[in-house]
Amino acid sequence: MDVDDGERKNYTYKRREFQQNHQNTLQAKMTELSLIKEDLKKAKESTTQSWLASRTLTDELAKLQSILAVEKNRKSTSTSNAGISELQSKLEAANMSIRSKMEDEVKVKKTIDEITEAMDGARKEKEMNKRDTEEERRARSKLKQVLRMRKQNLRTLQLKLQAVEMELEAFGASQAETLGVVNNSRTDNSSTVQLTLEEYKDSKEKAKDETALAEWRISLFMKQKLAAEVNRNLALSRLKELMRRRSEDKEKNEDGHITREIGEHQSSPARVVAQVKRRDALPKPRGKATVGYSAAFCPFLKSYIT
Image (cartoon, rainbow, N blue to C red; front, side):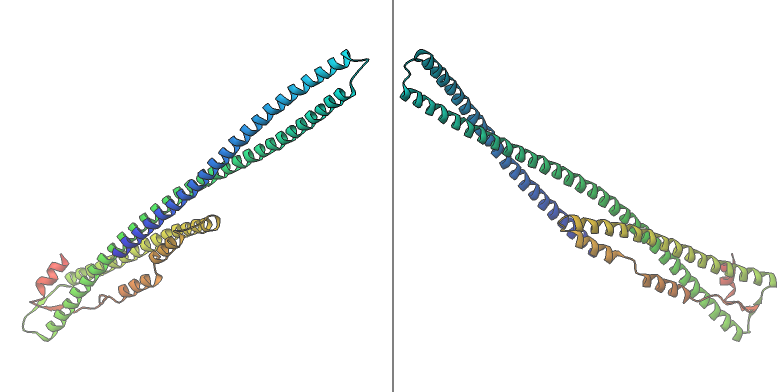
């Protein structure tokens, strides 16, 4: 029991350590997501400023175009080539600035779309990981509960088997003592009690019935014990398979301890064989007995028959 408590405490510590690592990973992801959101906000502000700047340049271009049109209309006959060239150069510079701002705006929008898509993917992946972790936690908890019930049932059957074995050993000891008294009575012919054939047959049949009942109870408990071990081993194999899949998909900190715990609690077939051999080694009733008994043995025989 001390070993089981130590393993349980060790498993609890490993599980807490795994949960702490998982929380640290989620915290790091959330921090990274916050930084991405901050960059996205800055990019949106930059895009807004660029758009406002382009609007200013567009308004300025419209003004220059209107001024140019007015100048052309007013000085259609005597247009100053220098003024027209200056206005044209300003117009071309404004067009180039507008094109540059528009290209920058397209790039910023593309970057914003990429960041938004990456954030959506990261959020979906985080939700899937959280859902998978929760499902595995529930399945692992259910399997552990089944394993705990199997262990309790197996322990109960083992205690029952020990009680039956002790009862059978006591019966064998009393039978050996009876046979010793019978053997002593053969040599002591000073005082004998004659039993009728019917009383002898009744005592013999009761002894056989007691022996058969004890053997049947042992056989029944052994079958129940083996069935409980088969069910428990099935639950253990399912738990091992779950831990193996978890170890292939994610980072694992506690799977080795759980596997070792399962291996240590795995029931050994050698113990079952030893228990069967020990049961077979118990003294069995003899089929023959003499009709003559000593007076000292008579009260014991009467109490046994009744």
